[in-house]
Amino acid sequence: GNILYSSKTLDQIMKIDAVTGNILWTAGRDGSLNIGALDRFGSQHAIHRSADGRYLVFDNEGLDSLSRVISFEISGTDVNTHREYELPQPLYTAIGGSAYLDTTDQRILVCTTTPQQAFEVDDQDSIVWSVELLSNLYRAYRINRIYTDPELSATVAPGFFCFDQEQPLMAEPSGGWY
Image (cartoon, rainbow, N blue to C red; front, side):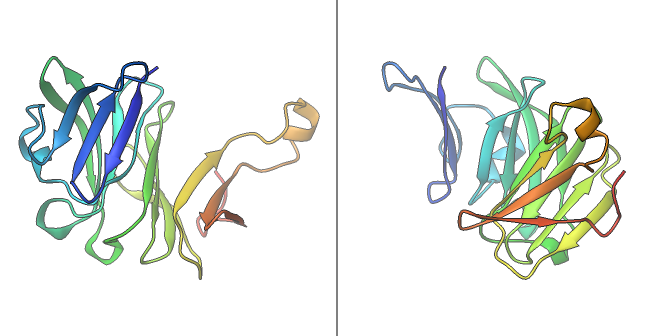
């Protein structure tokens, strides 16, 4: 496989050949891809490829000083935006944060560092639930099943973990489990 690298100080995302070390493409400021409005992302975090093959990135300093989540795919040297979710202004975060897409229901789990909040938005970009913690959050991951034994799984609710400097915190969202 190849390596996805995000340089928040360069405002760039890179795809690097893991064998040769050659940069296959760059997106962002002075990048090699034609990304249109995406050219203006900044201090981005958590670039990854989701299960549906699209790239997803948390853009801390998006358009008009709003943090946002961008899902996109690459065709040749062109970038096609699949989905863009702008966080409400009170949830703007200049540092840290992450976003992960659940491709089964198109919900996005978002984590912001300041304010220290994790929340999930549905496919209509409505916040379904949120939780605020008194800790600097860095990433949040959705965990659908802890146990593989069906009898144990039926007794344990799904959850998410928020990571603060390598120390996991477990919390129940204010909207309850769904």
